[in-house]
Image (cartoon, rainbow, N blue to C red):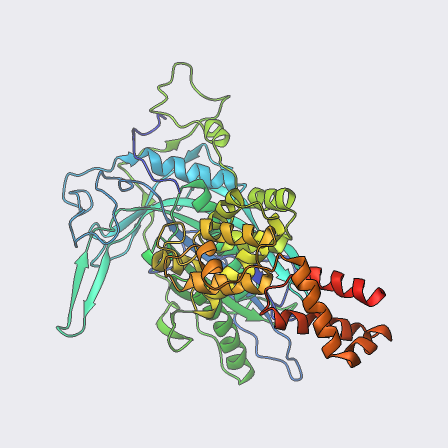
Length: 568
């Protein structure tokens, strides 16, 4: 059957690491079962029967948790999945709604080529099998913000299946060991987003905004291969980085471009899986981890106290740090899935099956998209380790924090300092200052404009500071003072701060030698301790000289001069 007509669309182009305490994640054998439910109902994929939760046996306290995820990523496209309406965040309500989005009679869907290409590219990056033929279906349910009374999705034959996502967990006493883990991907499917309901409690009314109705989504269904919040959050962060690297989704969780539903159950190892609950619409990686860990502990506590787990949908209250019941799902809802009559099968091609003389604008070549795949986060980390000799966990941190890798690379371009020193200053000092103010780098992008002129410490300023340190113009302690001054946003350069505060190291070796002599004469007992072989006494002498110079003397030079005088 001929491929459907494709409509051109464009999207703007635009990186997982976790720490776990020993024993916080209960591992289990080969995962079984399936993920469960989607937004407003059960999953569009086949479900396995739920098992009744087993009452804990006497003396048995060991539990295993099972976590599966369903992730909805908004596709980066200028227009919606089946209409030409523009896609723009925070537009005035109902200002981006076409006749088709409002489901007026006689309107027909026209598939957005950009959305299909984004789905294929994402599937390839996640090691999926791309189905050359996929189908669209109608999933019926009735909400005020779903004008048609159904959602166009891919329930029977999705565009991509059987993939995998590899992420890294940092473990060990010093969190210096990265353990690779893999979660299987059941499928990736294209579907429409719904509109948005705005509840006005003051007037007891609900307002509908259809700007989001019909926006293209990628639903990525992860198998229940995870066992705690940290693993799930790390997997989602890795997926987020991949989507951003591909340019298939901006995956900005604050703007609702990446939303996660978590399916959670607990059971005793060796027994059937327990009844699962679903925590809906998690739009923060931090809240995702907290919600899953809370729900695991809630279910364990409930079972150990003789209760039972209900098959229900829950929400996470981020202020209270707990999940709350929304609705039960014991009665199976009938979505009356049926083939979408207005869309023929979506047919894709590869180099071997591409018809001769086919119009490139009317077909999608899987192999051609494969050739355009950009560098993925895992490759970027390997390059950072090889090129700059940094630790693997440092490469994870650089990619994990939004904007931090770009900041690091810009500093590297402008400084003569060794990459290891740059890494230390970016990860320890710069990132440390942000953490002290309870800011993530992603938040500081908006507050400080990391790569712009309004940043408290720009890449150029840090590069200049590191050059001063590298040339021994200033000491390490003086460099920290300069950085602190830069953070005050007074618009001064590192050289100006060094000059005004007279932080330069003493370059007059004769004067420094005379100062060392004076300190030794003033502290004869310390000198005697040094001659007796006490290493602490040497450090004390160095400290006394540095104090006399107001920390403007190079400790290495001081040590050399002291050793020379002590050997005479």
